[in-house]
Image 1 (cartoon, helix red, strand yellow):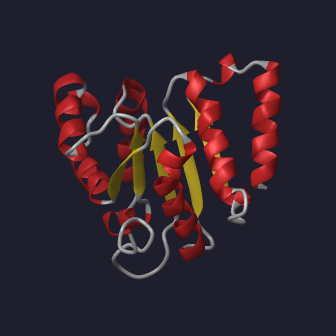
Image 2: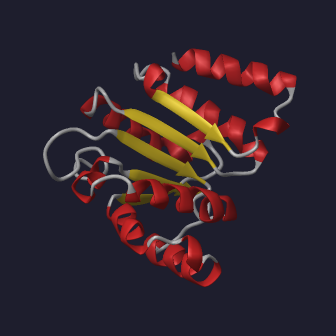
Length: 180
């Protein structure tokens, strides 16, 4: 765990850790991956290791890089920037998470460790999951990250913000307040 995205090879600290929930799904494939690979093309190749990614999904995926590469090449070849994709995979780690906080504990332990090792870095959570899972993931984050002291360095991006009800918005506000 010490050599995974928390303490990358090279010198200096990471700039940002990206955590993608729903990594094996269509939203990640059609929106997140093309956007990130496009962004990575603007970052000097020598700096790309500073942007590690934790990919999380409920389904087990044995060889995540091969799984996504095959899907991207067959379904979205025009959106794949091969050089950036290779660099993205080099800093990627896949975590299977279940439907309970305990099953997601290992992933959030890595996020906490990342925050401790990289005091100026941010963590961006991308929720490329059905709406019902968004609040559950925020609950996990509040549970595991609430005392980590990184609240002002945590960012959450959801694919479907317009589907949030007023009650859900109050719940989300309370969870984010708990994280700082």
